[in-house]
Length: 373
Image (tube, rainbow, N blue to C red; front, side, top):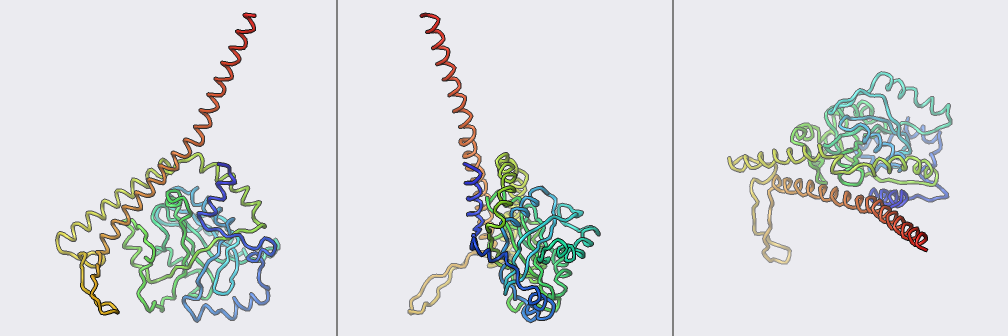
């Protein structure tokens, strides 16, 4: 498999669309005067807490953020994104790292980082760049894409109670390696006085949250909402993507998800075991799980006046099954990837050895025949 083929596969897995090659529409910044009026005066997002619906991230920014997240290992990393507002969408054109003091559970910016952020607009204009800060990104190694209590506080500060078009992006580097596609989420917070009309759970798509993080995850689920994430690329950034891809491709080739993520997989299995024990304990003692305590079956009347059976599964057990299937599927994907790499590269080496031995044998035979004659 060539680097080009691998890059195309990565783009397909992450659904990166190629925008008009001639117009490069998403890189055409809005008129500066009109944009200043929108951001400083009009601010339609103040009237609608869920005003922004989508985030469009360039393939270049996505690749840079993913490589940064992977470089941090089990330590959280942090960076900033630049771009602009377009209707109800936030467009991210580029991203860069920030000097931060991080641990395995939280990330805090240094004073130098805040000073850099404050001076960024002026420095951008001096270098003839018109983009503005549009958001921040950080990693959650091994525990999914959502906002913790600290993240919610940070995002609220940067949103300035919803007045600033700013987005928080979270990347899980461990799950990215296991799944083969970038595990990413984008979020905006609500004002302190706002509460969503319909109770949110931030669980529209299944997400296996570690047992130790479930309380933090649930405690702040109604403080923010998620945006749909899309990816794009253009002829303008293709050369930079190619240069970065060579580094990304090489580091990916030299690693196997089974070995690189061995610790993550072990923690996932241990965490899953704790969840199984907890649900089992609650069921045995008649306690309540996260949904109906038992799977129930009821008779319901359909529109054609026919009676049908409706099954109400136990949500806690259903999540346990989903979590186990996820771990199993990721392990299988790792085994397949390892097998492909072995056949692809070790097979080439073995073939080269056989060809060399064959050529040596032919040469030896030819030499013996020459001596005989």
